[in-house]
Image 1: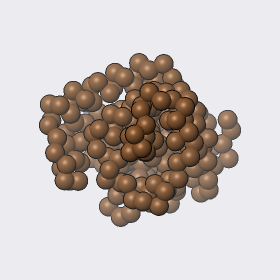
Image 2 (image 1 turned 180 degrees about the vertical axis):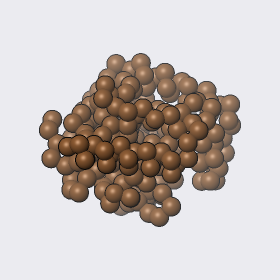
Image 3 (image 1 turned 30 degrees about the vertical axis):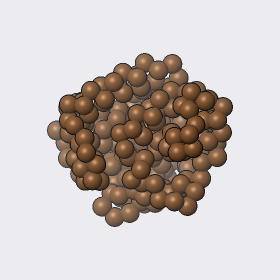
Image 4 (image 1 turned 90 degrees about the vertical axis):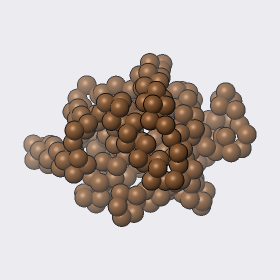
Length: 228
């Protein structure tokens, strides 16, 4: 595909901080935001809420095609996610929703159903999107592709804090195991496995602050623009 709108993709494993970073970069640039992972969480959430088995591929595909979703960034890096007029930001952040989303994301029919929906988010003045295949599959012509990673232990600690901030309980050891299992599943799935795009720039955020990562991405983008 050939893009007319500027797009920055931020891919990476669960808990690498890509969602927070994407929101910050989008806010500083005044661009639109796409949290692609939430689309899979929303599909899984809708399926579970309506007693649809995660094995029922035709129904999952139908749910994915008909999602009515809005992303509403707010101050402090908070993202409100509205599904059919209802704020489900809290519900889809649970570990069960995340696990279900990872399973749903491995289904090619669901990924295909959501592909056009994701590309439709690319509009002026620009789009910052995060996910697992944004730079490899959804926006292969993006002006800048970032692969953001961090150690499993650091990612688990971040996830634990995030859950506690939302009033949810979790166990650190269990989170580490879940992240490692999800990494393996995402990297070995048949359709759109998790890996950096050939032209992506890898950033390990384990020892970096949010501000440092955002600044680095801004600098990389400005260099790309000046060259082009």
